[in-house]
Length: 130
Image 1: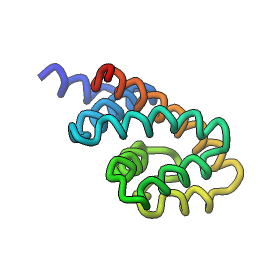
Image 2: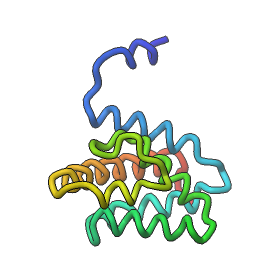
Image 3: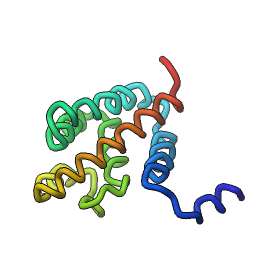
């Protein structure tokens, strides 16, 4: 009941990201947790190193090789509520990012980096150490 009341109160963006991250990470199947954690740990660094498009291409490449955890991660990124990417799907997320203008791309990159940080924190807390 306290959770329902807490959800009715206005939340900061960081609180929304944290809530999304813990719900998303909690839905990862046990068999996928190790690979998912590796992909999430790489995501933030890949965004900083090569940009958002390159980081998403890396995750998509894993998905193309039949790694189900990559598709799960793409799904979690699409439901994170990143401005400019509302309504995107795991299939068209990278395409939608490439279609953003420069300002939209910078905002999406900053927001996606924050989402990646919260997913990483949630994975570390939920999955524990291997």
